[in-house]
Image (tube, rainbow, N blue to C red; front, side):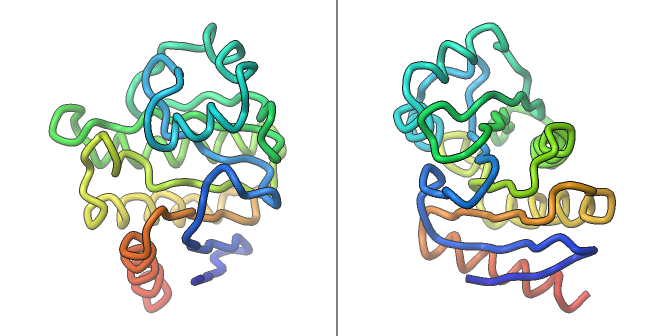
Length: 179
């Protein structure tokens, strides 16, 4: 696990399961446009949250790449789920700006809801094909760039699926630390 505090906001990277973050106020769903159950993160979150999540999501869909919406967490051990539609790599352009927007919009929603902690997966890096080596600096720059403006959020966790993904995030966090 790596940690870095920027402007009073702790950023940390861990390997784990996004649905098992009971100490976080919100978890972020790597959603599809219809906010429906899917594969990967979206499937895991919907299965863990139960059918109430899909019912709450239905009237909020569709969303566009770079957008986010917030719902209750239902059966998850969190207060909220923030659903972000990341860009499909090579199709939704400009992919870097759309990906950064996901992280920024999620944090804006967390602030509006008065949340203190948010756990993110590596958005767009699964089925949407965004290479993790390219997505990681975009994600960390978007989040660290907002750190000074955050008033309620003081803990942001990146929950990575694999050891390799964790190492890539840790290397980028170390690079930010030395800037």
